[in-house]
Length: 271
Image (cartoon, rainbow, N blue to C red; front, side, top):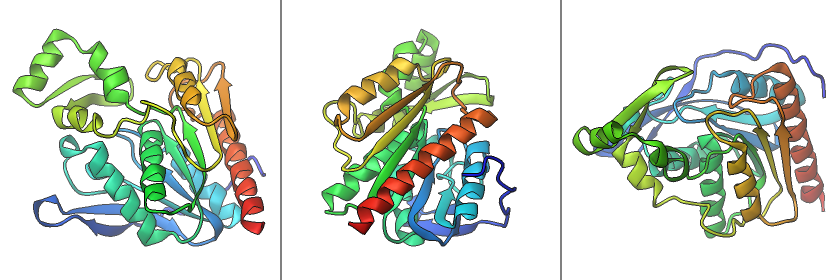
C-alpha cells in the first residue's frame, strides 16, 4: 500500500436523526461507497471524526476504493446533543444506526480507545441478532470498560464528591479542555462491561497499543488479549507509542494492519 496518501475530501457531513422525543439527536457522518468489506471508524472519548487517524483512513480507503464511514457520537464534533448526557449505550445505539444506514455487506470496524469498546459491544450485539457481517476488528489503544478499570479507581475524594453532588467530575487533559466523566457514563458502563469473561468476536482481531500510553496502560491491552479467542488475534506493541498513535510511523502501521484485515476478509468472502 502507498505510504503517502493524498489529502481526503472535506465535504460537509450528512446527518442521521436517531432516537425520539427528548432523546432525539442529529448524528453527523461522512460516508463513501466502495468495495467490500467496508470500513467503519469508531472514534474515542471526546474525539471527533476530523482527527488525524480518521482523516488518514478516509484517504486510505478512498485510494483503495473501499467503502468507508466515520461519524461523531452525540455531544461530539459536528453532531447534536450534550456531551455530559452521553453513555456507552447511547453511543452504541448511534454506531449501529449509522452502520445500518450507510454501509452494506461485510465491514471491518476500526475502534480507537473508547471506540474499541463500542466495536466490541457492536459485534456482540450483531452476533446476538444472528449477523456475521463484522469481518474484522482493528482496535487502537483499546479502552474497554475504562470507567471501572481506569477512571473510578483513580478518582480523588473531591472528584467523587463532585460525582455525587453535580453528577459529573473533571480532570485536566493533555489534549486541551478538561476531561469530563458523568455519573451516568460510569453507571451505564457497568451494564456494558466486556472484560468479564471470554469475548467471542467471530472474526480476526488486530490490536495496536503504545507502550508509552499514559491514558491506557499497555497492560490493559494484554488483559484484553487474554480474553479473546487464541486464533486470529494479533497484538502489536509500539515501544515508543503514545495514546494518540498519530505519528507517521503509527499511521503507516495502522494502514498496513487494516489492509491485512481487508485482505483476509476478502479471502473468507470468496470461499
